[in-house]
Image (tube, rainbow, N blue to C red; front, side, top):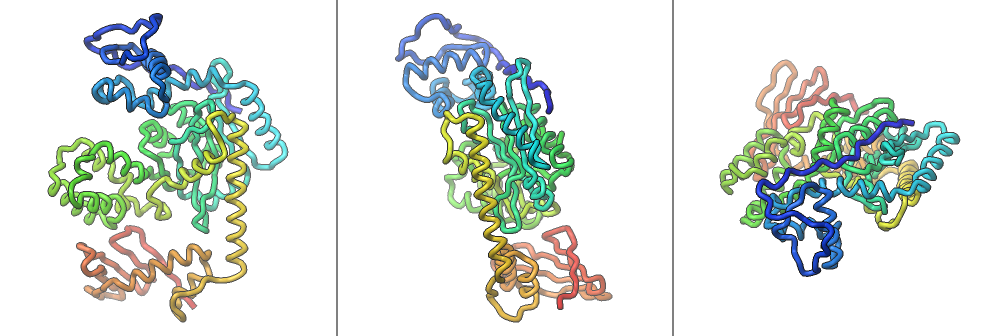
Length: 459
């Protein structure tokens, strides 16, 4: 087991340049006194003061706190700390409440499974006072699933669902039935870079240092920094659902303008080539005069992490958001409450994983007993696809095959067995795609995807 030490100190925020007053924590504040005009020296002091105020007024710090603070102080810059600062500060109190019996029982469960199962793996991290602050586990089935389906890894840490307020971080993928598959699960006490580095290194070590091709996450800066350190060869993708939610806060005025959301969503989801993306991006910033919008500029700067046109050389399974991981969190939340302990969390995860595997077994049986119904008979490529794909994957392939029927094509070159075509959808595509087919080598390349595809003769 790893006995590495997790730093639990919470960084202090900068002092207010010209403080109006100092908080006297010994005086009892009346319930109707607001917080305007008060100043604090650290995140801890701010939350002690605000926690007391929230109790007197009668609302939840966790749910409504930051929103109320922003209103009282006159805006986000005047609050003095972010939501992540607040959560990282509260983790110190959570550690003080961490039940040693609960954590020791969980470790004993892991040890028993490791002694009885060939490929069960777990690791944990403690602080200076030997209190559990991070842990990770996976079983042998998860390792085998990762070997098969680990090209795409989805990791989301936006959910907390236990009495210690630990961060739930499942590692999720997609199997050959387009179903969720679990690769492992980690829990952290805070969202610092070193915490994610520990978790990712532990995951990688448990998988014999095999890195995924693509990693899908939310827009957590600490997580992004850890990915660069631990998974340098993987492509980091950002969840477009989180980008859409953030846009509601940062560009609310633009979103309310006529037709803005149409072009914005097109950029997020539907541009096939870099040239097409640049065309629509230029149209958006010109039409809506948002060249100098700071959030829009930052979004453009990280376009390779979220735009499908820039990531086609890495497998992503067509997934644009981390909803697979969020589905896991939703499944867990239905079984737990904020008073649930670590062993309750573990048992709930085992239950969710058992349900997933039961459904997967059902699909395996379904595929072994029959083949999908074809929309058209006697089409060789569909007959071949039906033989080699699962039912769910076949229907996805068939859908794309039928969409290809609406495309126009024009042969623009033929030389030494090499055909070059222009392909486009009338009244839809503004840029024609170039397809090159080498009949001698039986390979094909398209301008919408830089990788070449090789074909064999189909009987």
